[in-house]
Image 1 (cartoon, helix red, strand yellow):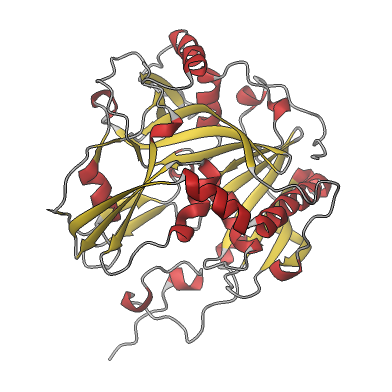
Image 2 (cartoon, rainbow, N blue to C red; image 1 turned 45 degrees about the horizontal axis):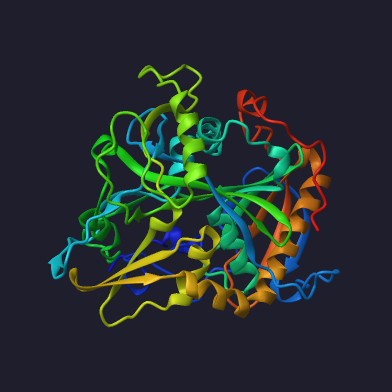
Length: 429
């Protein structure tokens, strides 16, 4: 009998199929990242282990780390098109309140792992800044220390918690005094064949949510928020699964749902009124085109959607970091038996955030300390760029910082010129 080939996802520490994988796994998990993770890296600048990472000691050591001054800034939907086009402000898919029981087909098809890089490979942060230019035209980048995807914060938290279940890489770069954490994935899309055991999550979302009529060409909704984390002023992008808001159909022009942030919403509307609608013709530069469509959806309506087999109850602490870093207030969990959904639990997460923060103070302080270490490393690195690589290890993972040999800027010059940037990184309190 022919021996099956080695699973390339297992070699990268990323295989989710486990015992169901039809390719070969080794006797032990790999302890080194895939070769692709070391592309464009130079000499190693530093190496650290999670267990030896110190808890920062300063005058505020007794002060609890919390996520404060949270504010929604902008949003956009990717348009399912061969060219990079976004709707601003867009809107999440709306929860349809389907009452179980109902049947969902097993996941099959092509799904994005990192849609921003897949659709805008040259400058993955560009759509974030295009949406800000429309919805927050007066925003100053002098007010930030860090720009990142939520995904990067989650990965770094896994490192400080010594629970790295998949190897990861993060590209780090300074623009002015602002540190950018840039998401890196070995694969940008995931192809799921019908016979593979990948569950029913995508099918469940398709059955239980729908985009507004004017946004039906959307392939995902992203939101941009700001907050302070241990003195670091953060600008964070994340993808939202849906919302509970069922306001009437929006018109061709952007309009809002009712919000408890009336002043902010009015300001956003004024910005949207002056926004020009992009021509369907995409410029030769390949930059992201902006279409004025959608409505401003209040943060209180945003939901995260999960699925689990009926015999395997979701452990809230498994998903709390993902929800906490975006302050997603609602979690909807569908429970099924082989795709037959019988229960949907709708949970409020805000009471859980405070408990989780208290239980993870040491880890959060280590995370803030690690972010400050990364900032110092990238400031001293050649061309102010570096690469962070961490191999899979659930006992004592090691994080290595390399010089980056890449020369491309994190943003196009056109966007950089729209903002004021600090010349040097601010020293956070």
